[in-house]
Image 1 (cartoon, helix red, strand yellow):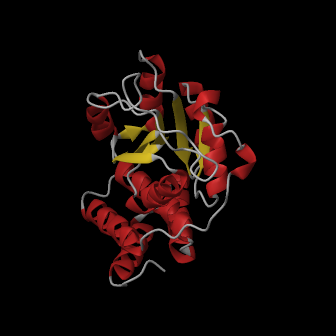
Image 2 (tube, rainbow, N blue to C red; image 1 turned 180 degrees about the vertical axis):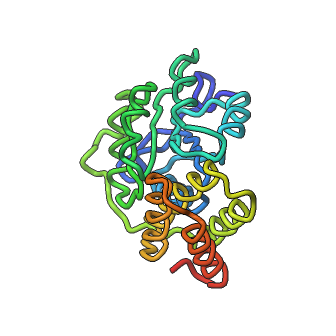
Image 3 (tube, helix red, strand yellow; image 1 turned 90 degrees about the vertical axis):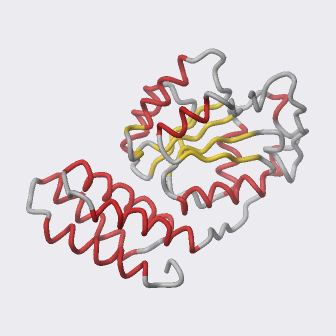
Amino acid sequence: MDDSGPLTTIATPTATRPLRGQTILVVEDSRYSCDVIRLMCLHSGARIRRADCLKSARRHLQIYRPSIIVVDMGLPDGSGADLIAELTQATPRIGVILGMSGDDCTREQAMQAGADGFLDKPIKSMAFFQRTILELLPEDRRPSELHAVRDEQIHPDPLAYQDDMAHIADVLAGPNDHRTLDYAAQFLGSVAREANDLVLIKAAKDLAASRSEGTPITARAAQVAGIVQDRLQQKEAI
């Protein structure tokens, strides 16, 4: 099913709903980060679908073709750059392909793979989110008044943060091989920045540094696991 094909009735974008008529597939393993985008889409008039890994995204794309796709660069089963490269070569091509990450070093990877643009996490500004997409859409899919793009404070669901903590607790409960710890550090660093969880930001950064420098990681991994368990005992994210 093509969410953006010629037989689909395209709603007209407006100054207050500038992304009306767009369907955005977000490939993102963090529920908290995805909830930020969900709320931005809600306020912008866009429909949203979510895939939490490369396998899920590919399965989704066999059935639906969104008008826009946002791909996180660090996913549990591989790099988002691989999916971006596949989508760039696909026919018909999705209208707008965006890479996304809290690690600015991955911007070049996304662009080299063929992305049209890049979203830096945490995404705090709805105006920036809207404008990044609008600038890449055909003129007939944009509202006539671009200056009307508005900004709002977004408050994602704290329970989504706990879901992320439960997810990474399961990951850390398994074999702590290098790939697992690299993924845990990347995932936690990203979602903690989104939630402004300063303690977890530092712990994730320390774990990533230990991995990069080749220093002992047992104590670092245990510290991160302990903080994650503390977060799971809290009713709110912060």
